[in-house]
Length: 149
Length: 149
Length: 149
Image (cartoon, rainbow over all chains, first blue to last red; front, side, top):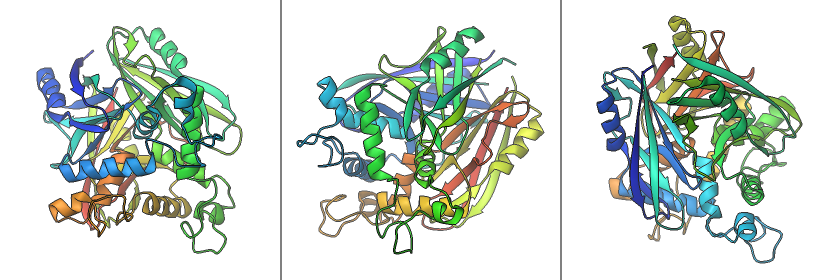
C-alpha cells in the first residue's frame, strides 16, 4: 500500500472567495516523493468546491459574476418557490441564508483527481487548483490531499 | 494491489430524483477494512450524475428548481434549435424526450473521489454523496464504488 | 506500486469541439492489462474539460447551445462588468478573448475517474468519455490517463 495523505487547513472569507491551493497540493506531493501516481483533492463541506482555473483577478471576478447571475443569492421571482416573496426552500425550511452556496457547491463538485508524471502534477502552465468557498460567512476549511502510487 | 470494489444497485423514479448513497458507499468501505485510501464513486449511464450535497428536502427542492430553470425540459424559444417550435436536437434527431437529462448529467458529471482517513470518508457533517437520476422515466441504476489503498 | 500511465495527444478546432476519447482511454487500459482498478482522465489546460455524455450529433449540438446561452462568448449587458460595453474582466485585463472558455472549463471540470471491472470501463452503453475544447482557436491538447490497480 502506498497512499500518502495530507490535510490543508485554511481560513476563508466565504462569499465565493477563490483560494489557489496548488502550492499546498504540491507540498504534499513532494513530501510523498511519488514520481508517477494520482493526487485526489477533496474539500470537506457542502458549501465549498474544488476545480481548476487560471487564478488571476479577471477570471476570479468573471466566475463570481457568472454564479451571481446563474445561481443568485436570492432566487428569481417565480422560479424557486411557491411563495410570493421568492426564497430558496433550503433557507425557508431551515431558517438559513446560504442556499445559493449549497447549490453552487453541488454543481461545481468537491473533488478533482490530477495525475502525476515525473513527480509533477499534470497541470497546464495557467491552470491552478482552487478551492471556492461559497458560504456566506468566514469559514475554517480543510482539504484532503491523497497521493496514490 | 489493493482495490476493493462494490456495486450499488437501486431503482429510481427519474425526473431528478436525488438518492443519498452515502450509507451504501460506507458499507463498501467498511467491508474493505481500508483505513487510508481513496473511494471512487461512479454512476453508469449518460442521464445520471454523482455529486455531494446536504441531502435535506429544501436543498433537494432548490436543486430541482435551479436545473428546471437553467436546463429546462423544453428548450427556451430561439435558443436551442433552428425550428420554429423549440426542441432539443437530441430529441428531434433521435425521437427522444430526455435531452435535458443528458445535458444536466454532462454538466454535473458522473464521478467523485473521496479520501479516507482512519477508516472514515472525509465528508463534512452535512455533506452526503448523492446520485441524481435526471432521466424522464423509472430506471434501474448501478453505482460502481472502488476503494483504493 | 501499479500505476500505468498514458498520454493522449490530439489537435482540436476549439470553439467547443467535443472529442470522443473513449477508445484512447480504452487503449491505455488494455495495455495496462488491469482487470480491477480505477482510470483517472485529466485534461491539461484551463480552457478544456472532461466529462461523460452520449456522443451523438444532437447532444453535442444541444450542449453547445446550452453553454452559449448560460455562459455566452460575450457577457450579457449589466451582468459582467462595470463598463458600459459589457466585457469579461479576464478579457479586459489581459487583452484576451477566451474568458467564456475559462468559465465553461472551470464549471465542467478537468477530470473524471472511472472504475474498471473485468478489464472494462464501468461506462454505460451510450456513455462516452469526452474532451471539450472551449478555447476560441485551434489547440494541441494532451490528456493524462492513469490506470491504478
